[in-house]
Length: 394
Ligand code: NAD
Ligand code: MG
Image (cartoon, rainbow, N blue to C red; front, side):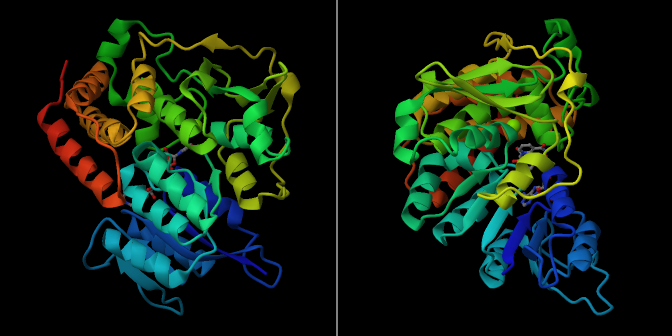
């Protein structure tokens, strides 16, 4: 029986890699999957082309709530088209997937994650922002419905692989000492403060090892992406602050490591290509064959590890602060960073201005416990407004 899958954010970097992997695994009586819904924010033509290729019955186009003129409707393919953010939720209801791969960028992915977990479906989660902004709520929804959250993020997929197969669930907690999240260090790891001050968007977007969408690429340069991953690890694996350490590993071959109480360390290795963690999540608990796999460790003469630098990359410190504060602080961290990152990409603030802005917003915020998704969305909206008015342009 093929499993019905929804791929959200299908025109992005992770979304396209997912569709690549699904090619040859869908359709016919032997197909493992049936793509029942794909979504995109813009690029309607690309969405429509992917819909045609996989004969997807539901397309959700969130960016433009009117007139889908990009959809050259004609021929035999006639999908149901859902418009706007509300349309995405309707499309999820109507297409009724068994699993949802959420590769939307930013807090905009939250409602789809919440819907998936509420419905007891499995969530293949690339959209780490969902956990950053509403981790405890999503955890609760998953525990109530029995949904699994399978992390697509390479570091967390690595930790999942190191933990799975160890002694039963309960025992893992007792046996686990800490995790080491690896970080490439991004394009400015060795850069002087002067270079960072003058950095243009095109410099910051040049990631040394991974090819990704713009927001996460800037997040790798500021290390806000790794900051989010600290919070993501906390919510996914129930880890305390002192159990999460960031190690800078420039080669991006070791995707993360787990240390156990007996002193053993397990690491997961592979080339830096998101197809591998995506495939792991698609197949879990089985392993799916992949003809493009193949990894020559002998071609790496050395693998290096260095401690992270909380002074030059204050994002890591802010993540730990949010972990301690809890409540809606993660939603504030994310919203301020989304707005500041966009301002930098549009040339309105400098590169160091991103973190200065986020720090300023977080400092002024009074943390409130979160009770509902609606409340998180309201915090997100208010923080965006405040951040737009308080951009630090240094
Ligand atoms: P991307 O910018 O390449 O693609 C984002 C996708 O989301 C696009 O399909 C876009 O149309 C859609 N989208 C954008 N704004 C939206 C909105 N407001 N509402 C609904 N849909 C919207 O991003 P990406 O690099 O593929 O990253 C996607 C997610 O995966 C992010 O949460 C990111 O942190 C995470 N992630 C990415 C990578 C990577 O290698 N790219 C690795 C780990 C985790
Ligand atoms: Mg990652």
